[in-house]
Amino acid sequence: MALITFGGLATGLDTNSMIDKLVALERRRSVGFLELEQAENQATQAALGSFESKLASFLAAVNGLRDAQSAFSRTATSSDTAVLASTAGSGALNGSTTITVGALARGAIGTSATGVATSTSTIASGSGTFQFQVGTGATQSVAVSATTTLEELVAAVNELDAGVTASAVNVGTSAAPDYRLRMATTGTGTSNALSILADPTAIGVTVTQAATNASVSVSGFATAFTRESNVIGDIIPGVTLALKSTGGPVDVTVNTNATAIGDRVDAVVKAYNDIVSFVEENSSVEQDTASDEGTVTAGPLAFDGTVRSILSGLRTNLTGALEGLSGSYSLLAEVGVTSTQNGRLSFDRGKLEAALAEDEDGVLELFAGSQSSSGLFDGVHAWVTEITGSGGLLEARQDGIKSVLTTLEERIQAGERSATAYEGELRATFASLEVLVNSLQTQGSVLLGALGGLKTS
Image (cartoon, rainbow, N blue to C red; front, top):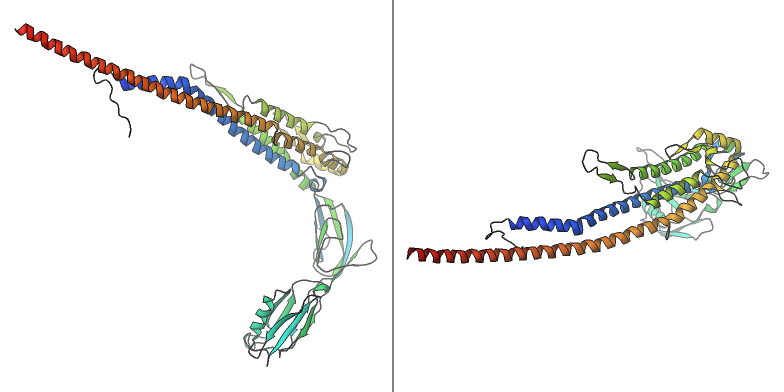
């Protein structure tokens, strides 16, 4: 139940308003400034969380350039995509290979020699077991009887899930249907050969297409390569070939994908500039010249030494020179990434492409290092990981704010209790005053009454 108080009944004073104002002053003294400090620390805590998130995005961008395999993308082009397509992946090396496709890999197909009028027509005159085998796998068996339909045989073969797909195919017309059984191995190559071991049906199932391997002749090798699949990834290092038809010769050429490399560098530059912009936006200091007090408003990171230190270290790691490299480049500025006057980075894609054309290995060594030295982005990645990881500089700063906020919350609660106690004291004091005044007023009335009686007599 809420406490209802009535003030000034005896004195005529608005004691409730007086108490509220006095309590507000006391609360401002004991709590208000603490809450202001709490809000400032909470804003800094939130800004540091966003700052850490942007560092994580920057780290992800850097990760694409710190490893030799991922830093340099390659493209593989085929001179005749009707014969084969090519895709470059990890480990692909620049160069050209000539390929001739002598044969494609195929799966085996079995069909019935005799058709039936509908898919629900029966296909056997008596009981028996239809058996087949894929490669050297287990013998697969389907029981048939005089009531077994083509549709039921198809379903039974498919339910075995034995590497064969069965279907009922109308090789006739709608006017003169002729339904045949078709069985096709799901895999290609000779290991997926289909054998019909027993056929008690009246439709005569036989293998009409044998399984074959792909045959590929490669420049530099006297003997053709045979593979069981038309997708081949172990002939040219890092390149996947997708065979489409026989033919050739076809030239498969692997080149450095300068556009993709440039995109990765651009991602790093944008992530870094995003961090700089964020820190600037949260570090503004403004003075309200319109007011007499000239109030100064500062962003949550305006005076944060930790953020300044991290940003400075990040800039140094990115723009500094690497020692001990054997290539032509030791600075990002030499391959198109330069510092601007506003503290951001600028990227000249044309300069990077020119550097790649002149000394690709040197650019790769600068970015990702070599067997004897670490690259620039590997060093940046290690540094950012350290400051953002457990026990790092950023965690220490955040822990410090958490500690301050805990202390402030305890002091605010204590101040609230003090203000509540002060309000209680004021209300008790004013209540006593009301009682006293009321008592005096009563005594005065009695006295005036008595004096009045004496005067009348």
